[in-house]
Length: 192
Image (cartoon, rainbow, N blue to C red):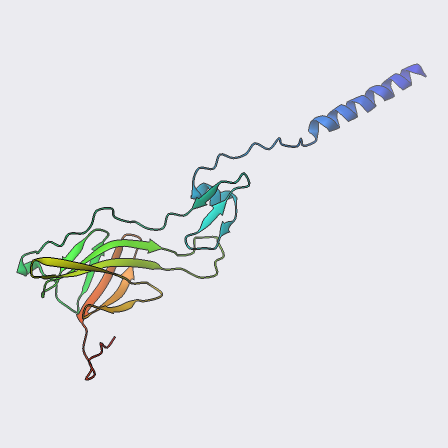
């Protein structure tokens, strides 16, 4: 009888020790080392904001980098007359490129913001690619630059400084535009 009691006690102890060893321990989860927005977005929910944001349970906060910005200002350079662009024809620009039109209008592509919805994420808005152009016209040895923003969804046509700018297409690094001189109505307003 003592042998049966001893075997039963050993079985109970083995079950208790085994159950204790296999049970999850509080705080035993090793936190992942998250160092970027992409790593955070792969593991945790992304806030549907502009720009997108992601928070980790340990309080780290990441924001998606959305633009290919230039830190160097675009300085208009007057090309030879033979290389000037014609109005009404499509022109493709990469970030930091610029073109000069027949009348001296200089158009440079400063950056392209990308607010499109990422793959495998349900978004409230589809987002768009939005190129920012720097436009200037040389006047008496001084140049005044103005920025305009076009978009693949919103504002694909903008009129500024007497010109109409139409975005025909964009990628993360290029934009294709058509520039025409804006026509004027009899009341003096620009027609888009």
